[in-house]
Length: 110
Image (tube, rainbow, N blue to C red; front, side):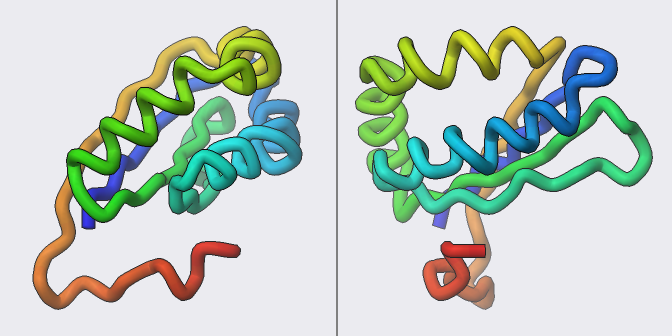
């Protein structure tokens, strides 16, 4: 399983608004596009940071789903104009699970 761990530094004071938007709109849009999404997660040390993860069965699936999502009207009209305005900086770490890692598919609704 391929997991993308996303780290967002938000503009000061935007964390709760970002979380509300993510929970209301973005998570659903990503899941509707076929991605497993976990989060958002509040950073306990920085009040302007949020983390979240998305999982894919393979690197090829990741590329296909991301390409489809980021070229869609949902991204361009409903997600990008709102989310990107709240984000100061973001980075993503791409990791692959080891053999003993449990499949998160059973907890995708968390």
